[in-house]
Length: 247
Image 1: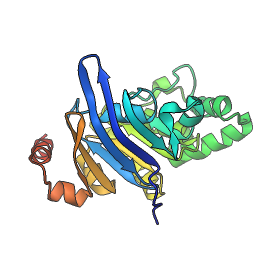
Image 2: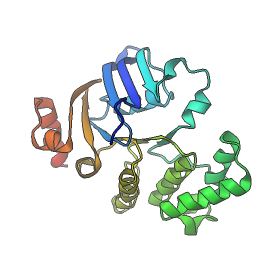
Image 3: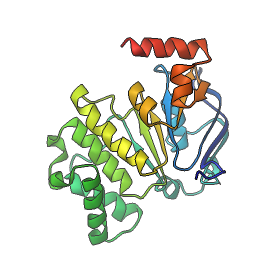
């Protein structure tokens, strides 16, 4: 049973970079255990919206409430970010640490866990993404798909209540995409609340509870995968889906 109150609630968010208005009054919400996929052309504002939720970008105006907190006025950004996991296109792993260290160091630094506890949690999370056997590996020597799975494990080690994924498969070779999407699918089935910026339409269709199509800094249309993919109301949505299908 989903909670009545959204855990992410965004009202009239606007963001400008110089003369370019990237977000033009976005209203957006996510409920607990919901998987929401953001789709749209490059430059439509999807990643900027995600980065505003994680405070990597500061919205110019509007309100963002996450877990009931007005995060634009939070006094402790690190405490907030500890509750929100984020996976990027380029993995952002620490290249001077091995796989296990990548997963233990943030726990010790941010959550003040002991080395023993952090190690136990890290091994469990690496096992969850199929990477426990690589715990001692140099991250510079593993594949892109493996790096992204380690990045997901590292985020999960922080026990996030919300996971944000920004095009997690776009930097991967085609044969590695499936292994990362399978991990994400498993997380969705376990009830983790997720917001996913993706160009993988099959993933959005199969895994999302709701799909949001962004266009030119606004939400053009949203609905269930069935509604959006099979019966789009907006001509812009229809044109985007047609071009995506032809790629």
